Amino acid sequence: MPNLVGQLINLLASILLILSFAMLSQRRILSLIRLFTFQGVTLVAATILLGYSTNQPHLYYSAALTQVLKVMVIPTLLHRLINHLNVRWDTETLINIPTTMMIGIILVIFSFNLAAPISSLSTSIARSTLGIALACVLLSFMMMITRAKAVPQVIGFLSMENGLFFSATAAVYGMPMVVELGIALDVLMGILILGVFMFQIRERFDSLDISHLEKLKED
Image (tube, rainbow, N blue to C red; front, side):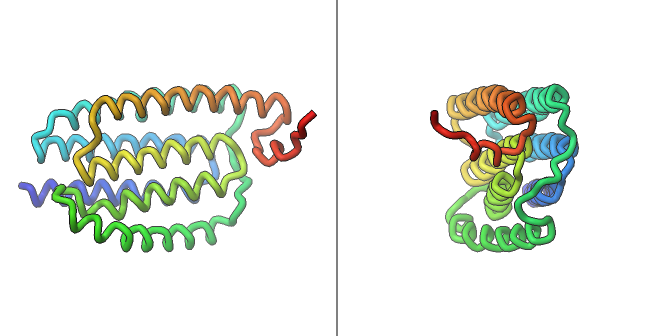
């Protein structure tokens, strides 16, 4: 049974990695939000499996918090945001998609090599997924820096937080609940602040391209 659970966790981790690559190559913002939601669902399933296999009830609370925040609340807020901003496509990337994917593959290889010595020190049943968790973080960070518009960068930030959460869960069976609640509140407040920020960019420049911010000058 533990072997089966471990294989299922590895499968879910692989799905997380595939979703990260899909988000990296996706240009349609609606599809990005859907992929982020699927990422949240996968994260919930992996956390529940870990809680079941290790008999740690706090992981169920973490899964419930993730379900509410990252599968229900944040996607709903993002959908409302893009509806108000009338944004559907993000065609402007700083690096073309094939080059981005090649760099992504290099980041995955780097992540596995970097996580290998850490995995050997961990006693977690999911220690073999640490490389994938780190790769998800780096791929999400890359998505943030290769997109020209604000909304995909916000989604990249949220996806990076998913990777960090999964890495903590895989390494040490999650963080203390107080810490998780604090992070969840910070993420939610960050979404609200970034929403206001994007409205201001749109109102000032009639575009969500953050390169327009370079035109601002001190009076």
